Length: 198
Image (cartoon, rainbow, N blue to C red):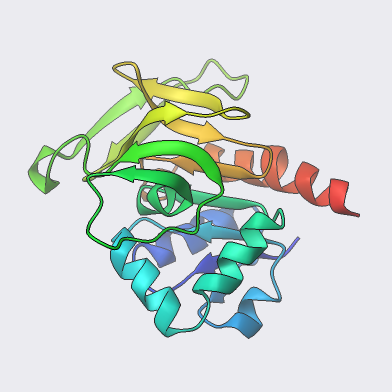
């Protein structure tokens, strides 16, 4: 499986390192030709509007949107969750997303940079072990649609969700040494989705 990391802005290096730790040799994606090489994609944390604008400048916004609509497995953390959401609350004027996840997210829901925090949360992957979650100007999910599974919540707000082919977290697992989320994406989301395509 070839997994790409959208490498326009944000914590690209941390996602690359996490994927390597999971046995994946990731491809940094900035161009349509690089996107064409990958079977699955990771959207890093960063600034969602900046990532979308750069994707348009680099000519890969629509190709990514089309690949997601066609069933390419994608994992998005923080800004990546916003980019996968079909609806955004408190969006900047004209803010665009790749879409694909039938969720409504609220930008900066947990507060500003100074309100960033870490906490241990339960992640519904069959393990009883808690995950250390790092929230930095994080969104949360206000509404989930049909076909969306909530995998983790904080104060009753969903912070990790998935569909058949897409996974999103409002926190940053790439900033910790725990690679369970990346492994979950590879093993439980991407591999089954790609096997159905074969």
